[in-house]
Image (tube, rainbow, N blue to C red; front, side):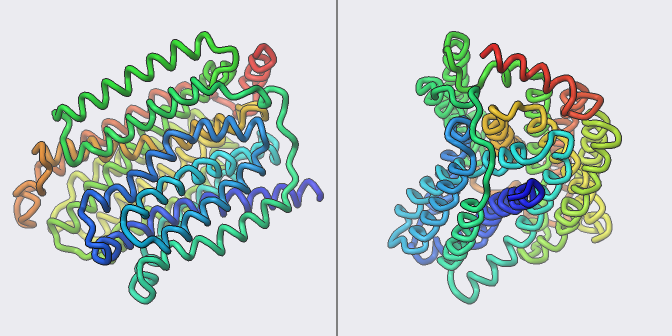
Length: 478
């Protein structure tokens, strides 16, 4: 297989793997009402069809990346995508909602296996200074999946039922697995072949799972509830134990070469706060459009469609800006688009035009595409080949925790009642002012603006420069 063909095949596998995960998450939202009706499930049970998946993914992403560094990312990709498709088939055959919840957790395990591999395969087949373009293509693919998910899900559920949403994953997963078998990538390096620290892995998975579970429960319980505080304290306690253990471990779950990398840490922080601000803003905006203005899901989707369009179109332009101006300036520009977009949405009201809403969400989409391409290209490009999986897992973890945090902040401000029984009175009357929405969006804009701090810590020049050499030196020292 020629080098060029291998690069193109790796890009197809990477983009397709990212798309199947993104598509699955968006079409599920459309299928959940029908699933609830068929099984007579409670709201809590339906929520757990999403939460069980999220907990499994968030807790295992870094561990999966570490396994890929040791055993090979193509192998992990193959196992992950086949398991993902098999779990989808099991969900489609589920006789009751309990089986759906359990199999969604299983699907999350396999989703965690394949996600870091989608980035690591790009790192292994592309030179660090040429990662921007494939990362941009992958970002555009995720944007296409996010846009197509609700539409595809609506058609499938309307004509074939909710089970078809999961059946569709099976042939796609088989196709990706076949392409993965044809892909030949370099074998894992000595650094990546170090044994897995089981204790560190368990502590990391526990800390992330407890944190995500606690944040996911904020919309129902609120920030002041005992369950929220106990969950946060437990997550912090496990994290402290993890740090103490990692300092003493011979082979820590997050290698020291990665933990000490300023570009990696800055990229993670940038993705965390920016995705939190953006997804929190989308939560608030869709809440207002549907519950206050009475728009149906399709009309709401059309209002926010410019966000996806600008993500798809903005990713290739972000690659050009990254190569021309470097990570620092490009990331600052991306945050500089996201923050005004969220702030503009705080002025949304019953008389707001389509143009106003479209412009605000277009700023969000363009800015987030820039941040995604820049942070992903920097973090993956800066990683030595032996640690590409761990870095990819960290990146995906930030992209899972960030939106959960943003939605928790939004819900905690807008729905201050501990029971979370319904929207405030001002959201039930479209003609009334909506102070909760405006203030919440300004808080989320401030969270996204925090991204300027880590963005300023990114390298000025291309990520394949001096920092990668320093990481390689750290890796050689273990």
